Length: 254
Image (cartoon, rainbow, N blue to C red):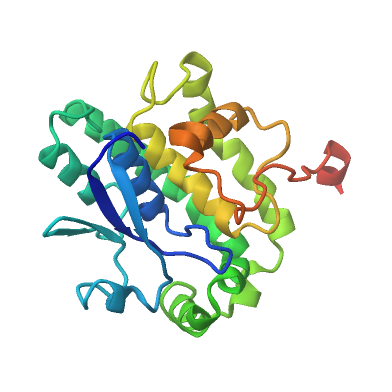
């Protein structure tokens, strides 16, 4: 990065060292967009409280000098991005105006419902298995009790081969935008791109089976997005996003 000032990110990482949290991914891109340096404090879920001096148990966040800023864990809130625009208005803005922020909020909420929600069920056991060993008991208990209605991770992930192809056509609105413009932000990337890319970075962090086919039209935008800021989205611990085998017409007809 080109800036001299550093923002500290309290990361949520997997055993492979890559970030799992889409919130943390979006934070890192937002900081880089501002031209600031990123100082990573590594660790997983169960060490977050100790790393932040007891300030949070699960909310990914940043420290900027004496300021601590944590996300709410709800899509479309952008607490850290709002802080960065307020604290550094002289640097490139993440949100050009309230209308642009509403556009990004809609896009983020739509992608969470369209992609993360179905992919979560397809990769929940992978999610657990790729966590740091000390985090796995917490992840299993919290996900099974809080998100899966008491079902096991194994039960929920079973049958994903049939479910994964169903997500592909649901991404068409995103493809339509990117057929007309190189970035969701227009001629240059902005927080619309970073929020959307964070969804695909989350998928790459957990997906042992690729979620997207090799010929996915979004591939060019995703690859360019991962390459931004000296390859911020490139980490050797990430899994391939592309390679999903789609059913043929004959397969679909049985």
